Image (cartoon, rainbow, N blue to C red):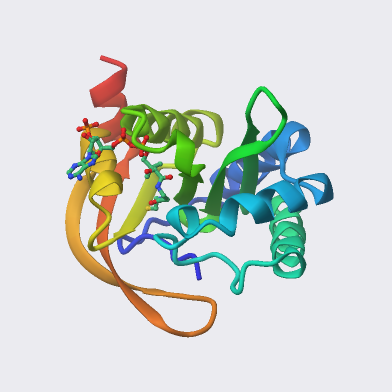
Length: 198
Ligand SMILES: CC(C)(COP(=O)(O)OP(=O)(O)OC[C@H]1O[C@@H](n2cnc3c(N)ncnc32)[C@H](O)[C@@H]1OP(=O)(O)O)[C@@H](O)C(=O)NCCC(=O)NCCS
């Protein structure tokens, strides 16, 4: 299951409320819904897409993906989650991203994937940077923690390249209770601003 960063920040009630409001506002136009379930299921059924991701519902079938989309929408209402899909020119789902937010800790985690024909694009680092900008700048979160499977060299390169600090390993809990060892990174909003806005 999604896990908050190792570093513990404490948000004031005002900061947490502002983050929840920002997540709800962002969710209004672009959150995944029932119409995305068949395409999302096709995307995630490909192990080249879903195998490296620990917090997906399994087995991947329409029923489980429908439940996951509904749970994510309920969390979005609370200001704690943004599940979005991207589509190609033909309207087929070509990728997804899921941001989990802990407003009381001013913290977030990000997971996502591109369809297999869009992987190895050379754009992984830019994709991570776009999502990170959205989290820090649009949602107002102050800390992001990321994980990747120990052998996920593309994710690791994209995350390193986006400026995250490596902080060893951690155990990630899959929904079925099994554990995956992960590489672990963090970045603060201050670090992001220094890197991208100065
Ligand atoms: C992770 C993902 C979004 C990256 O997008 P991508 O278009 O495949 O990534 P890129 O082609 O830009 O490659 C990312 C980096 O890995 C490097 N890389 C690629 N293959 C590599 C290899 N075999 N060994 C070492 N580095 C490699 C690239 O050079 C690039 O680094 P750079 O930005 O420093 O040049 C995509 O591969 C994906 O969806 N994978 C499946 C799901 C997944 O792993 N999700 C993330 C879970 S944390």
